[in-house]
Image: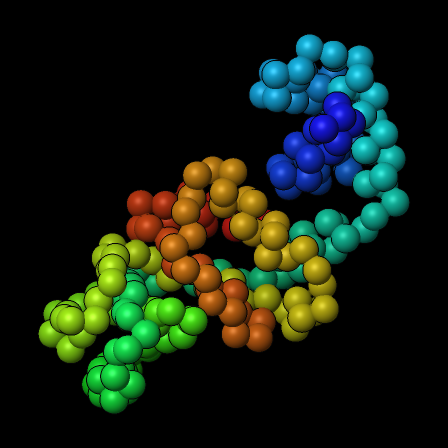
Length: 206
């Protein structure tokens, strides 16, 4: 891969660097040195030229600015004490429906994600024991101590590309693992570990 491609990929993979570069508030020399250090490249001049050229490309594009503006209008909600259960594909639907009905009587929610080889349930941690009893022979894996973070965005999110990628990269840059992702129209829902909540809330407040 050429030095230009390496520099462009680095900037693309670091959304805040890309936004700062687009706004013209980043030092090209410092950025070139940083990329050189992290990517093991000694050709400072080539990196410097690559960063400047990429800045001109960003100047022509408004997508990132539109994504940031949309996220500034979004609202964030967090709910702790969440559990997730991954069940095998042969889990009887009647068992899932029975547990869901039971939990909804408590005015709580159950989120069901059906995949090709498994079914994931996201539910309040207080119902963990009921889930283990109901699915004791079907549980592949489970997680406790999770948090459900919901980003409620304007309806423009439907037609604006790049929103989810920016959110993913922002969290990944800071070693925050997304255990599950759900989407319902304008709501984007991340399931993360409770220990990462404070940092995630800071990163997602644009």
